[in-house]
Image (cartoon, rainbow, N blue to C red; front, side, top):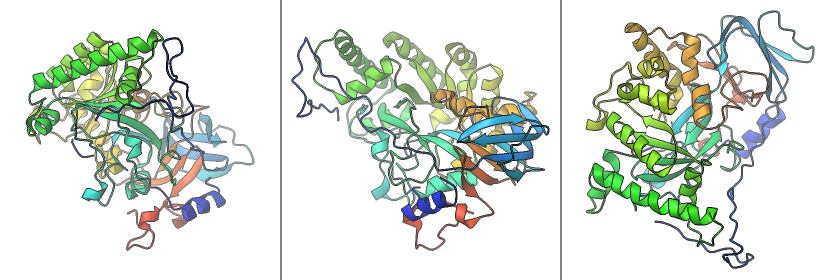
Amino acid sequence: MIHGVKGSLLAAVSLALVGCAATGKETASAGDKPATAEKPVKFNKDPYPSTYRPYGGRPTAVRGVTIFDGEGGRIDNGTLLFVNGKVEAVGGADTTIPADFDIVEGRGKFVTPGIIDIHSHLGDYPSPSVDAHSDGNEATSPTTPEVWSEHSVWPQDPGFSRALANGGVTSLQILPGSANLMGGRSITLKNVPSRTVQGMKFPGAPYGLKMACGENPKRVYGSKGRMPSTRMGNFAVNRATWQKATAYKKKMDDGKAVDRDLAMETLAGVLSGEILLHNHCYRADEMALVIDMSKEFGYKVSTFHHAVESYKIADILAKEGICSAMWADWWGFKMEAYDSVNENIPLVYKAGACTIVHSDDANQIQRLNQEAAKARAAGRRMGIDVSDEVAWTWLSLNPAKALGIGDRTGSLKPGKMADVVLWNGNPFSAYTRPEKVWIDGALLFDANDPKRRPVSDFELGQPGEGDVK
């Protein structure tokens, strides 16, 4: 779609005290020597590095719970241990709990890895939804790979704390909108209170490039009387831009001097595999064409987003190792979204392709567990029996892998980040809510403790302050 918390400093300190811890060209900076063929200028690939530091946590054991480990495993009457921000052990009732661990009794409750939303616009299209906050689409040129979504993220967006408290979302990718063929870089965030976006950036997570095919770019730019105004125009502009990018990258690889071009830098990063490609695309035929184009220019598509016709080419997606990030039943609202089925997600799963449930919406991000439940139920009705624990991979490990962070989060395995949600019932029930949420082992939300409900500075002093119901 074209559209798309920071906690206050006081709130952040309080948490810590209680145990939570148009194509741009740019010349070299004044201190750099002029570029020469013998000594090309070296550019900083990470000029806005993460300053994220986990809040302090307590050694914790959650016992007596049903555990979905995020990789398709299930443990009944299980025990989860985490310390120093990492998962320490996952086991049954006989798991030894060290004496210095806090114990959370979870009988009748469920524990999962935190949900990871691969497609969000929080911060770039924050609440209140007003024109002054509309910062997700640089709709001034059909290709704007030089813009970065993080430079629009407003950390005070109340949507971050809603996603945490109501949805159990611990990490999320913030994407530019889909007005442009190449919308710009995306950023992956830890869903924590921070004064700056750098304080939310997932350390070491690769950047992404948001692309869009189909109706949006041709409508936006065709209405302005410029190219592209058709789908063939979409591909022609894309190909011309990738051709320019491959030439730029070759000069850099050959050690030749280049004038710095921020747009080409991003595309060169995609061509080298350092930046992951996320493509908004609905129709199966267009996804197949995008795959062909990626082979023509030598890049890899990580994920097709929305992808309401993925079920038609699920075997191709499985063969190519491309993920589909999908809605359970949000389709039919425009022509390119018309020919979906409620069984899209389970059909993609059955074909062996990477399956992800995403939101693209500030409200739906609070109910991704229910979206996965709807998709799982649709599959069961047609004879595709997906277990609860396997369906959870659609919400945690699969999006983590597609974002390039699956080695650090997305499942409850020893050594991984302790991004954990304790649910007050089966998380696939519409009546279930997060009871506690830990990020890197720090308790950032507790439904039973008003002090553990992050509130952004924007909300302080306003009616309904802190209300996350």
